[in-house]
Image 1 (cartoon, rainbow, N blue to C red):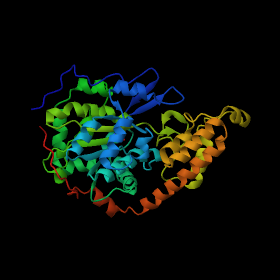
Image 2: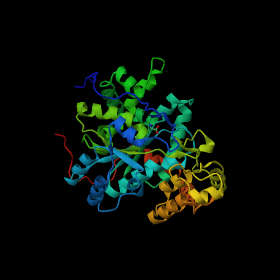
Image 3: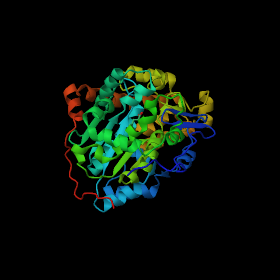
Image 4: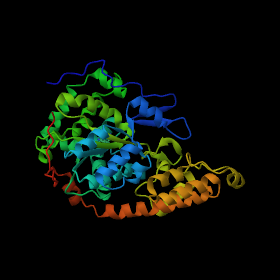
Amino acid sequence: MCEALPVDINLDSSKYTDDDIVDPWTVTSKSESGVDYDKLIKRFGCSYIDKKLIERMESISGKPVHPMIRRGIFFSHRDLHTLLSMIETGNNFYLYTGRGPSSESMHVGHLVPFIVTKWLQETFDVPLVIQMTDDEKTLWKDLTVEQSMKMARENAKDIIAIGFDVNKTFIFANLDYMGRCSAFYQNVIRIQKCVTFNQVKGIFGFNDSDVIGKIGFPATQAAPAFSTTFPFIFGDDKVPVLIPCAIDQDPYFRMTRDVSPRLGFIKPALIHSCFFPALQGPKTKMSASDVNSAVFLTDTPKQIKNKINKHAFSGGRPTQEEHRKHGGNTDTDVSYQLLRFFLYDDEKLESIRIAYNKGELLSGEIKKIAIETLQPIVANHQAKRKEVTEDILDQYMTPRKLNYEFNVKFKPQ
Ligand code: TRP
């Protein structure tokens, strides 16, 4: 049976480096070029997705990795080698990701983990579960249960619009699903029994005046990493999981990984993305609660143009003359950063980088390229989202069997 974790277990700890704050609720850096990911990887104790790992993924899947992996936007992992070895020996896995619905409209940065999740689902042909943490947002933000539940549904439509296969994808909102599936609550309690208040304080920085809902919540985000939370999909099989997420979510899954062996599961594998920069610059991430920091999925082409022209931080020089002479800085230039995420033509991206750094390409010109890249992506998203009716949404959100073939059933030793 499960006991609380030993107190000295290294669940970490300090969420502050000298200049960066990274936790599930805050991401800020004092540096112009943003969070120092080298330090973060060391502090969190995860590993780089290096060239060797990418080659291994490519040789197993038989196709090139997604540009976001190749470009180091997904830069870090836990136990991906272990997962790949399992795949090689005929085992299967499922994918788990999620979204905290804090505003009705999502921004382009929110697409990032879902785009790679979709790529992984298609590449490995595996089932996917997506958690909408409306409970988390009620607890952390000034939102009622009803408001959060509504946002969860609205955001789920945006996620569906990205193009997940309904036969292989289950989307659930905690405030709804917890009442529909007792297996979910049972796993939450199993997890809560393994973690003390001291430990969540250490991991998440909770204190005595935090509401008790926050203290228990991490178990709710951990539970979908255990396949028995979805008996209608996996029966009672213990299926390994891969969790794509932004690196600020890692604390939840450090806790999950520590609990896993005691519940008889192998530890979830993770791949982490870096943050999507705010238009104002890479010191903070794009935020749905700051209208000018983000390009929203509901923005018109004109709004996108105005926002980028007006707000996108430029790594260019103060005058055209200086820019031509000394060149711009693509590390801090937000338009260039947007292109790294969304312009998939490697040669074109590289020629833009070189031209900008040399000063051949001006600030206004790189902004124009960013605008013209994002406008069709957003417009296309809006068209797809329009097709997502309440009926279609209900299909994704109904607990049901998913259509996948696992050739070999995984049995933990
Ligand atoms: N807490 C996440 C957020 O606020 C949502 C989430 C739930 C999630 N489960 C997840 C994100 C799994 C990534 C992976 O956005």
